[in-house]
Image (cartoon, rainbow, N blue to C red; front, side, top):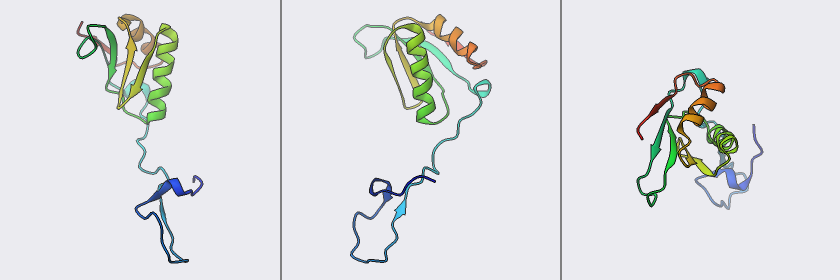
Length: 117
C-alpha cells in the first residue's frame, strides 16, 4: 500500500478534529491490465482536426495509464517520431500504420487490425 499523503486524501480538505481519520486514495480503482493477446486494438490513419496532417491512431487499449504510456513510448521510439498516449488511445505522428501493426504483433498483440486510410 502506498504512502498516505495529503495529495491522496479524498473528500475532506481539513478537519479541526484531532482524531479524524482521512479517507485516502490507495489506487484500488485502477484498471487492471489484460494480456496483450486478449487486447483488440485498431490501428488507423486519422486526419480529422489535425490541420490535414496524418497521424497513426491506435484505439481499444484496456489497461492502466502507465501501461498505455509505456506502450506509446515504445511505438514512438521504434518509429522515430513524436506522439501522445492518453484516454485509451495512442497517437503516433505520420503514416506509420504498417510499422505500428508489425511492432504490436511482435509485442504479443495478436488481435490487432489495420483499418481506414
